[in-house]
Image 1: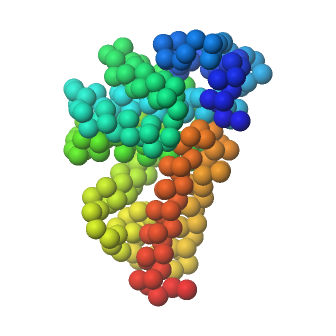
Image 2 (image 1 turned 45 degrees about the vertical axis):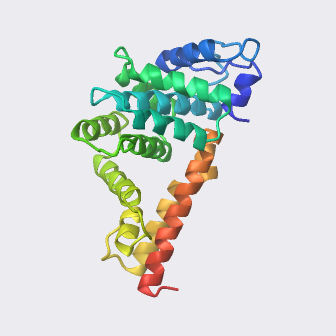
Length: 259
C-alpha cells in the first residue's frame, strides 16, 4: 500500500515530523477536501526507513526542492512551472495529489524555505539509500533544464544539494552529462550519446561494459526502488529510465558486434 492510499484512509499516524511533516501538514490542510484526510502526528510504530514514511519524505522533498531550484536564479520562469506540472501529470497524479505537490513546490519557492533542514531530514528518513538519492537528484536535474538554460547558479545549487545528501560530486556530474545527452537529442540516439547515458568510457572491454550496464540497470530497477521507498506514483519514471539504459546498451552492443 502506498503512503497516499494510507493518507486517503485517514491513517496518518505514520506521518513524519520535522520540516517535511510541517510542509505536508500545510499542504494537506489547504488542498484536500474535508473528510478525505485527518492529518496526524508522529507515531512510534513508524520509524525512519519504513517504506510508507520514506515515500512521504521523498514526495515532499522532491517537489519542495524543485521549487527551491526553480527560484535559485532569482525568478521562476513559466517553463519551470510547466515542468513541475508536467512531472505531476506524467506521474498520473490524482487531482488531490497534484494540489499537494503544487503547494509543496510553492513552499520551496518561499524565502523562508530551509533547504538544509529539508535535505538533512530526507537523508535521515531515506536511511541514506544511494539509489533513492540518485533518483531524487535525477528529477532535480530535469527541473534545472526546464527553461532550456542550465546556468551556474543552478549547477552550484545541485552540487550543494548533492553534498548535503553525501552524494559524490563526480557522480552528480555524470548524471548531468547523461541528462544533457538525452535532452539535446532531437534525432536518433548516437553511439557517443549511448556511452554518456551509461556513464562509461569507450575503452571498456565488452565484459566491463556489460558489468557497468548491469550495475546501472540495478540502480534504476523500478520494483527495487519502490521497495526502498520510491513513491508508487513515480514508478513510471523509473521504468522509462530503465528503457533508456537498455536502449543505449543495445545500440553499443550492435555497434561493437557483441552477442
